[in-house]
Image 1 (cartoon, rainbow, N blue to C red):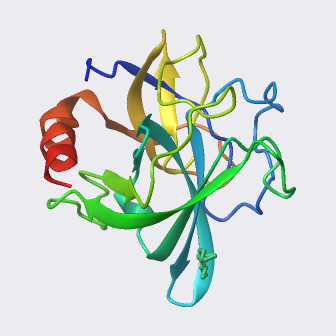
Image 2 (image 1 turned 180 degrees about the horizontal axis):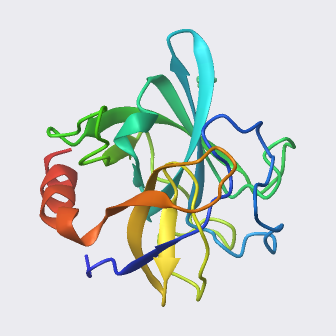
Length: 182
Ligand SMILES: *[C@@H]1O[C@H](CO)[C@@H](O)[C@H](O)[C@H]1NC(C)=O
């Protein structure tokens, strides 16, 4: 895998209502085909996060997006609708970074192995990044100059800066090793 460089753009904060865009604008449909929408159970509450497809069967997200029964929706433009482009795939295995610290948000990174490979379409494609500069959403990627370099870790609920990102490049050895092991 070539080094993932800089970062991203999902515009939901952890507690924003699904589909609500904060401090952003509506993206051109499917212009970011690597974006993933995650739904999971966190102590009986359905929660959501962003993530991004890094291989047909792997999604990278933030470790704070952990929970049970994680489902990944790919190829969505409007998550509130059932769109023909959407692929919903369950997560088989979720591996958080072993040194993730929920108090400090250090090592806030998690790999999700999907139950099956995503079908590559014009709406679903692993991270081959379009030119984009944007702020990201929880678990989503930070994309800059065609490279994914960060994962949105935390920030203010209204989506304003400053927000913190997990630097992807420093975790490449862990990402590679973990992907090989699954
Ligand atoms: C994920 O999908 C499965 C099967 O459709 C469902 O049983 C489960 O509750 C879903 N998880 C969430 C968090 O919605």
